[in-house]
Image (cartoon, rainbow, N blue to C red; front, top):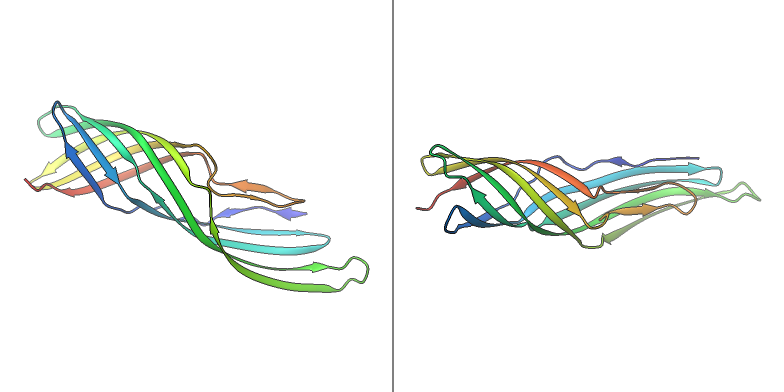
Length: 179
């Protein structure tokens, strides 16, 4: 028997954010982050073979409380909050099964949509904000722990694989200060 999943997820994340500054260095930030997820999975044993490939769109909506330290040029910050996530996609599947009595192969393929269980995550992070005129550059590192594996695939007589519940992102925010 063989079978394994290979990630085909993209390493980039894109999306807008809105930050509202409050008093005493505090702020609230809301993001809408998009990433492309995917996997491919070949599976075979004595009774057949199967190849599945999924492409999915993941949307995360972190809502963060942010604290910026009051330094003159670079503003280090820490953040924490909550993030809901939804993942929807499509699976292309093709393969064959073998009739063990006759040896005849039956081929098949299908295409179907997926709507994985929603996830909620706890987010913590930190970084620094550098102001270049009205342009704000904010490199940061974020850690998110999700409450479940959003993608979880189980073969009846084979491997199980799923998405990670712990996620680390290195992000660079580019913003334009209105005032």
